[in-house]
Amino acid sequence: MPKRFIPRPTIMSEIKNYIMITLGLATYAFTWKFFMAPYQFVTGGITGVGGIVEYTTGLPMQYTYFAINIILIIIAIQQLGLKFCIKTIYAIIVMTLMLEGFDYLFKTWPTAYDILGPEKQLEACIVGSIFTGMGIAFCFLANGSTGGVDIIAAIVNKYKDVSFGRAMLYVDACIIMSSFFIIPNDLVTGLQKVFYGFINLVIVNVSLDYMVNSNRQAVQFFIFSSKYDEIAYYITRYLKRGVTLLDSVGYYSGKEGKVVTTIARANQSNQLLSAIKKIDPNALISQSKVMAVYGNGFDRIKANSKKVKKEHIAPKEITENSNEAQK
Image (cartoon, rainbow, N blue to C red; front, side, top):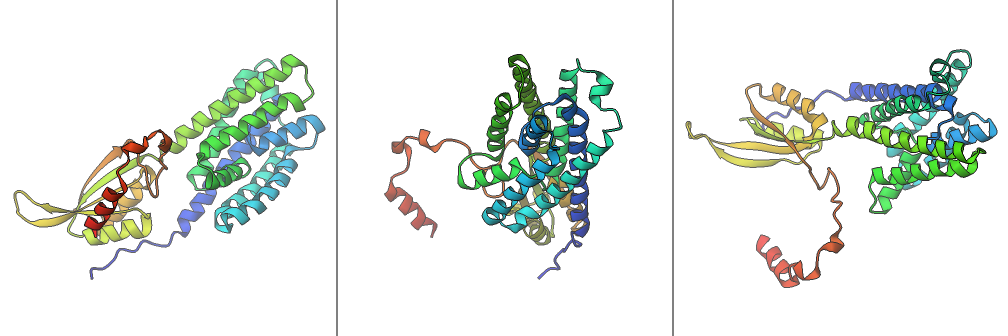
C-alpha cells in the first residue's frame, strides 16, 4: 500500500478560527454601540430584542442578550448536541463582554450620533448595517455563530424543511415589527424605526451573503497524477468530500492511469492544492467553478416535490427491476 499523506494537526487552524470569530464579534459589538444604539435603531436577532428592552427600560442590552442566550443554549445542547454549541458558547460570552466594554467606552468617547448629528440616521443605518454583516460573516466563515437567532434557526432547520437563512429572516422580521408596538413612540417615529430596521435587515443579509457565499461556492477538480490513491485518500479523509476515479489513457504515450475528480467548497481549494503540491508537485490539475451542487455535504434541494405529477414517477415494478439489475 502506498504511503499516505497525513497533514499536520489542525490546532493552528482552530486557533485561527477563534481569532476570526473574536474579530467578527468585536466588529459586531463596536457597530452596535457606535452606530445602532445612539440612534435607537432596532435590528433583528437577540441583540435586537436587547435593544428594544434597553430603549424601553434602560437595562443595558448585553444583559438581556446574555440571559436569553443562556436559555437558548441549554435547549440547543439538548436538541443539537454539545459539539455544535462549543463555539456558540464562546461567542455568547465574548459578545457580552465586548458589548459591556464598548458600552463603557462610548460613555466618554463620541459615537456616530455625536459625529454625524441627529439628522444622519439613514447614513448611520447603512454604514452600521454593512459592518454588522461583516462581523457576522467573520463568525460564519470560521464555523462559528453569534448565538441567538442562529440557534433558533438551526433547531427549526433540523425539524422543518425551512432553510437556515429563511428561518433567520422570519424571526428577525418579527422582532423588528414588534418594536412598533413595544417602544413608546408616536406613529411617525414608530414607523421610522420599523423602516430603518428593515433597511438594516436587507443590507446585513446582502453583505453577509456576499462575504459568506463567495467563499462557499463550489468548485470541481480533475486531478491527473500517478499518486491518485494518496490524493483520493486525503480528499476523503481530511476534506470529507467524495471522490470518483476515472480511467484514462494518454493519447500520445498510451499509458493507462486514473483521474481523480471531486467537488469541494471554494474555501477548500487552497487546502487541497497545498496537499497535492506536497504529494505530487508534477500533478496536472483542472479547476472550474460549479453553479450549484446539491446532495450530501452540500446544499439541500429546495424544489417542491409536490409539483411533480404522480404519473411522471416510474412505476414500482420498473424501480424494482432497476435495483435488481444494479445488484
